[in-house]
Amino acid sequence: MRLSGFASGMDIDQIVGDLMRAERVPMDKMVQKRQTLEWQMEEYRSINRLFDEFRNNIFDTVMRKSKMGSRTASSSDENRITATASSAAGSATYQISNVTQLATAASQTSIKPNENDPKIDPTKSLKSQFQSLDWKTGGVHRENLKGNDSKELTIKNEGLTIKNDTDNMVVKVNGKLYKMVDSEPAVNTNEVKAVFSGSEMTLTFADAIGTKDDISVQYFTDGDGEYMSGNITTYNENGEPVKDKFIVESSQTLNQVLETINRSSVGVSAFYDDHTGQVAFTRSETGEFNKDGQEIEFGGKFFGKDEQDAPVGIINMSQANEQGGQNAKFTINGLATERHSNTFTINGMTISLKDTFDSGTVTIGSSVDTDAVFDTIKGFVEEYNEMLDTINEKLDEKRYRDYQPLTDEQKKDLSDREIELWEEKSKSGMIRNDRLLSGFMNTFRLDLYGSVDSNLDSEYKQLTTIGVTTTKNYMDRGKLKIDENKLRKAIEDDPDGVYQLFAADGPTKEQQGIARRMRQSLDQAIEGIAERAGGAKGKIQNHQFTLGRNLNNLEDQISNFERRLSDIENRYWRQFTAMEKAMARANEQASFLQQQMFGGGGGY
Image (cartoon, rainbow, N blue to C red; front, side, top):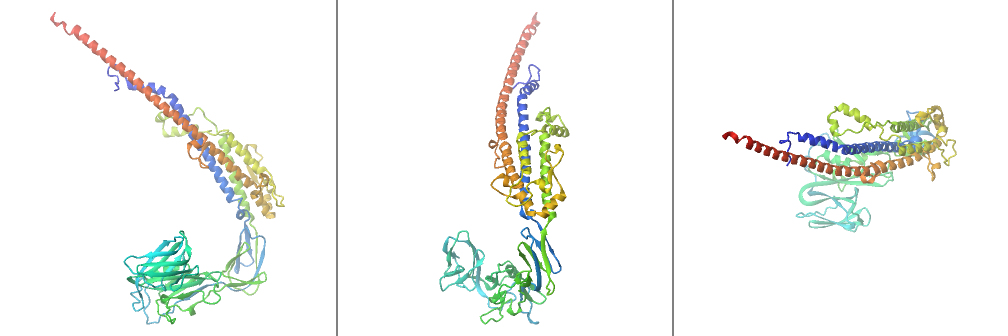
């Protein structure tokens, strides 16, 4: 119980508060020291972020062959042929003539309906428009499963009988269609045997299917529903067939079926033309892939085929309607050749044929893209200079030791603007003249100025040889400047030598390019700063780095001191409470004596 001046008339709260303010002075200093450590830690981490960004940009710019070996392509007639060049293009020249045909994509259309035949409404169910077709009766079920590291997989559908309809079933493993067999074992890797027994179906593959393999199965039961199927075959660049099978339910619309086909692995796009009532299919790739037949092959009732190959389906396709599907044919440097596409790449040069011609020759060549390489090196120099300016500014920043961090009590008496200005000076100079950072910056300068002893027979062994030197102003502390004419000449004369000056690799530092050296030095710098201030290299807990351990120790001291302050405050209150009680008793005694001396004399 605390008594607050009722007997003495003193403001005990004020007195204890003033006494505790004096007692808290050491605590305030510890809190200010903690704030200073936190600001220092953030300064170091901001430098580490700067180092990390520069390190990543080095890898993405001057160490990339695609950036430092950038080339441009030229064509003597861009109306006929255009070209682009990668860094691997070299200085080759190509003569292209006799472009007798351009590559086209194969396409097919369905048979045009008679004038009296109703056209398909692609938004309505197929059953409502094709009731007379021979739909199969049964429920359609789709399941996605995982393999079990064995050849067998059993599917159950309790309460329904699974139909033995392997002609229409679809089994895919990792998106690849498997051939269904039911009278003989599966022997090939793309075959699967199905055995039916009531509500169960067992699939047996030629090879074990792993637990990471995705299996999709479409099968049929004696449940409600109607369906038919169709299949499409195309060919890949090796002339190998690519097949897919589609289960079409009577409740589906034509638009829904075509959308499924467009997503298929066979690589065709399809659409329905309501003007002609026909469906058009086009391969997504140009070129001739099946030299012995059609580029797009259709099968199954949905696409209008029965056992007599008569049109009986919904989309009645005709192989005779196929067009296109041809390779580009041309002569390059005297060699007559073909390509599936009108755009192709030869030795890093991407060439695009725009038109056919049988007279004249188009010359294609490549040269170094001096501007692109120059801009890459210029960007490296500018970013290095910016990093240098930032760190030198931090190392030179003035430390205002009279401006210690504000305590909460001090902030109560200041405006927001006053707090901002004060803390601006408090934070200044957190890493002034820091030896760790100064050491790293000296290492960077040595990396830049040292010669590169690569195996290439190039005269460009130092930055100065390509026109990159330090400024004459010693106050710049090693900032770089570029002699543009000299740098451009070096790029044009020996682009690979300039690239190796930055990116060469080797077992010793002397054999490594300056950018590679700097990346290694930046790695060491980031590691060193993380050891001190954390925030990188997995050091995120205070106990893992120096300043963090200092903070932990300081937090322990603050906690211990807070307990001590609490004890001191309680002691003050006990003392003042005892004083108040004593004064209260004295007052009571004085009042009693006064009453006895003066209050009882009225009888005399």
